[in-house]
Length: 216
Image (cartoon, rainbow, N blue to C red; front, side):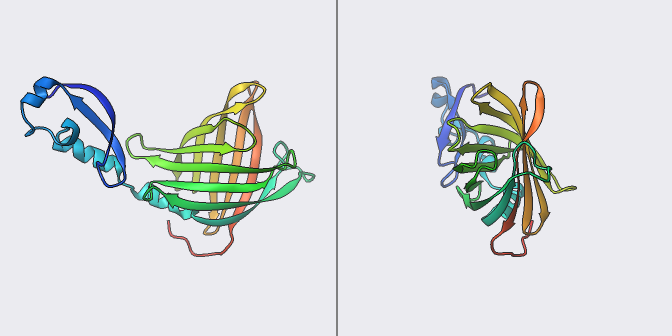
């Protein structure tokens, strides 16, 4: 039986992808290569790595967001108020790394501060953990918001929860909802928890610049 003594990232499991590989002991190497493939892995382990690196239906679903979007953003703290301030925003979204992730570049004006800002979002789906993952970075900070979530077809909503950095409190809980309204419209809501109280942080509705029948 092979004795696994560690793990590392190995390249070229499939063209242009990464997967988890294992090292073997010197005793294993002397036994020959019949039981081991690349980096000492068995054929079964190689197949698991290939499956992990292969985009699936969840990644195909995320491609719905690819395109150019125009949005209206509402006052962070009072999005439902009749006096809430609104600003415009634009998103350019594209599929990257062979369909494994969606990269979004957000440009607009913060409805709270009135300052222009740019944000970058990376969203993907982890085949092993069965979770959607999102990473957000923007010019209004030097930290990152990191979250994991799920998608419910019943209400066509992605729900994420994680943490972000608050300049006053440090790391705080955050969550966001991305709800698909129709083929060319979706709504984004972001909430944060400050001093034990959850409150709205950001809300926007985005529409495709060029309407099209999207397939999910």
